[in-house]
Length: 270
Image (cartoon, rainbow, N blue to C red):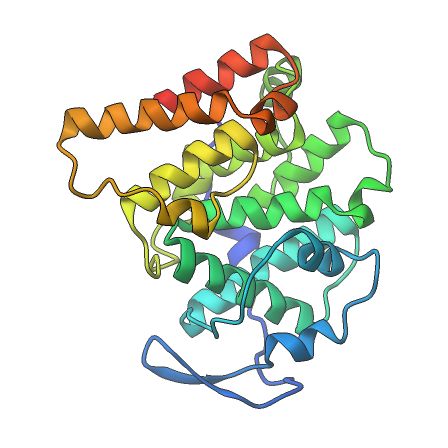
């Protein structure tokens, strides 16, 4: 997809105040002591049916503390706030902003993936939540919300037509935007990539393309590729893709043979 060039723009220009905390707890982040609420304290404030509730019900994660720098924290807060405004039409409370930082911190520390992959999963949670789905929007409106939520702009008629003609599922639409050069350039240099590992990121990308989800920590633990020579490395990618393609989960996600072929071909290009 040819996505236009951009800068951080509205997504990253804001500044989220980090002073209104419910529970003071010292946390070391990039060598600086920060203060924030514990995960269990945040969970007590979550209401059923809201996007934060959907996060807790569909993802298993632990409190790893706040691992981002102050600037990274501000950028992530503005990104999630933009999703609240564009997808859900409401402002987030400060504890909700803290919740997403804890979740992204967990993904980066545990899965060692790239930031755009973590942000894709955050967007997937927003667009898959009951709070969003019950708005009963058509796919064109979903695509509009996705462009505005992730890139801070409307999609061009050509971009929308290209994506809608492919009849992608929501996860695929979000991935096309989150994996675009525009989005990657937008966040490049903004985040340090805490705990990033290229092999873990490659495996995560395969799971995203094949199954519309991130790889789980236990799935990563069973894959050891770091010692492989280049030819064996690509053989391992091929083997993983074929294994996932034979799974019941893949058959449920890939709605048509055409979509299945697209997913497999995209994953093998890694």
